Image (cartoon, rainbow, N blue to C red; front, side, top):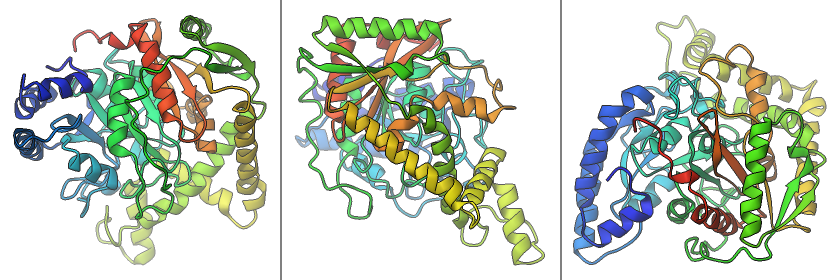
Length: 483
């Protein structure tokens, strides 16, 4: 059962080959047995899962149907879940039980999805390796000595190890696509505003976006269908009709114009990954796609711009965690200033503290124009580059990451080295574009991903290309040894 995809589970439930309750019990037992190796879960919700599974079986018995009805999933632990710990991977929120469900959680629950638990993540989604979590690092199931990517590493590791078929995740600078690449999954960052951020604890509000992590594009289409849509509670949610993402999966790629930016193939890219990307291009050419070289001239400025904007927004968003209203509070504070200082100093880890300080500095009166304003101008240039490119091509293709997953602890003493691993992913967040990573092969036994970017609200196009690619390749079917 654990080897089934979300689509196969939907068909099995519809054909009454097994019940949601049976499947849920199998996966909960598997998580209990195998997750100690991975540390991919922060909280298991056995009681809730079995309750939801029984309800889903009853709904099916009454004639209801739906791809997510009775399907087991997990939520990244920054989606608020009523009455269940929502920690954001931080000591600061270790004791926080959300009083309501995030819109994404509520929508998926209404569709009948079964929540198995909350997955581990970099603290407040700040990291590229899932090593900054208060609950310890997550291990990559393909090699337990390597990182799974971040910040959605817990969701990625759990799905890759076949502990469950799919999970929710979030992407601020690549935090869905990079873990997908490192663990041989398909991960989709939707257009900014496509999925509600209400009840999703914010890192950088103008960059954060929720999306699906699964083994196939077909599964991502199913999960995105349940997540997407306008939400009046979220002022950044866009009132745009949600298409049937599964309906266009079978479309032909004949004549599809694929742009390959020359800037992607610079000295920073591992030559073995470059070769795998070229192989992916050849596969898509066989399916009728037309390849064209393009340029994204301002890509080189994206990382410094991102690492000013994101920490600036984080310093503002995280100011609410002060030890007064909720979250961690220090013992026996001398006065209010001592309460603030010690609660925040004890509650936040080193990476979060680093980004808060960078952000506060960039927003300070003497430096706002020199840093934050300039970064926002670069952001506009990055977006303009993409708009010009999409006048010539239908999608953009390149590597998801410059290197395969690195060893645990390898970049801990050099945060900038980890930041540079986001070079190909952050541009989509700065521009608000949809992006997808899909499996493209292996380097030294570690998975590698190819990234696809599309114009606004063209998630269906990305899923279509990825699905057609996966019908003609088998990278996505490979399973890590021992799982």
